[in-house]
Structure formats: structure tokens, C-alpha cells
Image 1 (cartoon, rainbow, N blue to C red):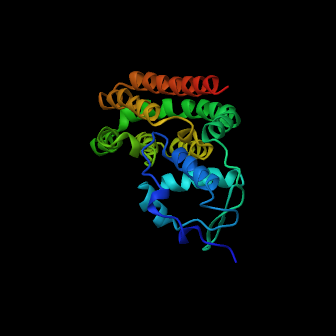
Image 2 (cartoon, one colour):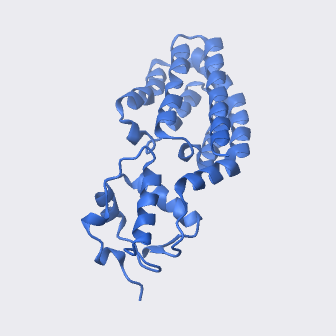
Image 3 (cartoon, rainbow, N blue to C red):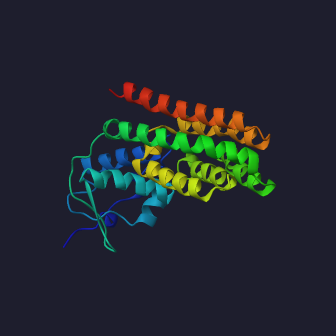
Amino acid sequence: MDKDAASHLTEADFAPVRNTRLSEEIIKQIASLVERGHITLNQRFPSERELQQRWRVSRPVLREAFRVLETQGVVESRQGGGRYLRSTRVLDPSKLRSSELAANRDVLLRIWEAREAVETKLAELAAERATPEQLAAIERPLLAIAAEPSENLMDLDLNGEFHGAIAKAAANPILEEISERLLQTSKQVGFKSIVGVQDWRALQGEHQPIFEAIRDRDPNAARLAMVDHFRNLRQRVLAANETNT
């Protein structure tokens, strides 16, 4: 029978996670627990609720860390049966991120080309057609971003909410559907996990000029602001790739 790691781990084995890359800090702590023999091969990890309490992190952050470890074959998740350690070789998360970036860079760039083509037009249309209620819906995630602590931003989908609100305000269901599909594909590739919290906050700040142009009913300015946003996205991922190679 598999042993349960929760049976002998104590509070002293855990430190509150305060890193700007919370999921990576969790991976590092798991690596330390494995190295010190506190979690051994085939042991079951403590419950998700217990780990959240001990590390003081949100469920999305915890699940992102385990997603990375599952991808590497370090952890196995069983439906209704918890998570188990399947390898004691826990890789450095920065090396994992570099590998993930290298694998996903070209895919991201192609997705963003398609998104830019669609979303520049959506921004133009939104500037012409948005109702007062739709303008408020576009601004809402921007206000939320300004109010949230940096460490919480990676857990929220305020980026998707912002772009989705613009698509809705454009009043073109066909373009809206295309935009939603591209946005979902972009999320699956996982750009958010590649950049740090401060970079993510800066990128979200680039939404403000787009909103202001739409609010001011200036289609050309809205289009140019969206072009600038996607250009900066490309520059970020290319710069991150150079840094990690």
C-alpha cells in the first residue's frame, strides 16, 4: 500500500510561498522535501486543501505547479485518489520554463498574428458601436488589475475578460467567435506561465490606451493601440527566449 506523506510532514517542513513565480517556488519546495526524504517514491502528497493552507497559496497556483510536475513525469494524479510521487528527479523550474518557452514560442507568435488581425478590427468596431454598459464591461478588468496585488494577477483571467468584452462590444458574432477560439488556444499554450508577475502586470497595463481609444470613439486610435499591444507581446516572448538561451 502506498504511504501517505501527510502522516509525518510537519509545519516546519513548509514555508509560506512569497515568490513572484509562486508555482515555481512550490516546485522548489517539493524538490527540497524529496531531497530531504520527507516525501519518498510512491508516497501520496497531502490533500490539496492541506497544501493550500500550509503554503498559503491559491488553488490555481498549486495546480499549476503540479501540472508542470505531471508533465515531467514527477507526479501522477489519480482520479479521486490524490497525487503520488513517481520520480525523485525534480527539475529546476527555471530550466523547465526555458524549455517550455522554446517549445511554445513559434506557436505563440503564429497565434498572436491571427489574434492581431482579428482583434484590431474588433477594437475599431467597438469604438464605433460599444454601448455605455459595454464600455463599463471593458473597463472593469482594468480597474480590477489596478486593485489586485501583483501576486494575485496570475491566478485571474482579467486579460481574457478584457479582450472578450471588446469582442462583445464590436457587435459582430462571427468575429467574436473567432476571437474567442484564438484566445482559448493562446491560454492553452500558456504564455502566462512563461513571464513573471511584474511583466504580466506591465502587459495588462497596455490595455489602458486601447480602452481609452474605444471610450473616446476613435476607431483608428483603437486599432493602433491594439497593434502596439501585440507588438509588445512579441517583443516580450522574443526577449524572454534570448534571456533563457
